[in-house]
Figure 1 (spheres, each protein chain N blue to C red):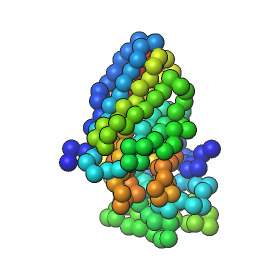
Figure 2 (figure 1 turned 60 degrees about the vertical axis):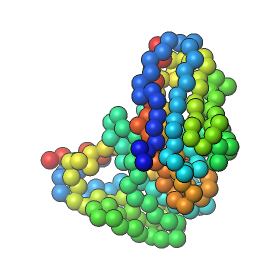
Figure 3 (figure 1 turned 135 degrees about the horizontal axis):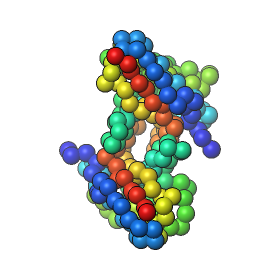
Figure 4 (figure 1 turned 45 degrees about the vertical axis):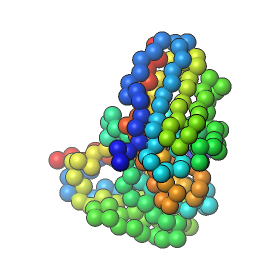
Length: 111
Length: 113
């Protein structure tokens, strides 16, 4: 039962342009949604989160949008930099419960 | 704080051998998760603990896998006997009471030959 889905295995973007990573979920009871970034040979690192009662959260170049009616969230990175090249995981949690991850999207930012 | 500490970083073992992976959580964190990363399934939750108590082990693939958290400072994931299909990167992550985000260790890359 895949509650969190990232349907795009990879994304390639030119440096300076916008990167948009997408995520869909099935459980309307989730309280928080999170994005993690992972470099090779390292553990995932927390990037940004959004509460289910909000529809947007911004932190520098990173903005997460939540569309509850569509059960969809997205991560926007503007402007994209070569150092942003990594695997991005979408995750969701019902508070006090387990953190569920999507399969990840590989982002490549070309210089 | 040094973050979540996992050991060993790399483990190569022969099929049939017992493997024990270790995790030291961030001090004060009360939730601990064991994940396995594979190409096919991404980050797969194996088991998680709240306040040292196993809450959900439905992700543990078989009886060959077991996990313990004897105290708030230490957890182990054991595979006995190990099989080649267990080869993956295993991550431990911990979370504090007041935040939704979990913090990950560097992972243990397990290779079973």
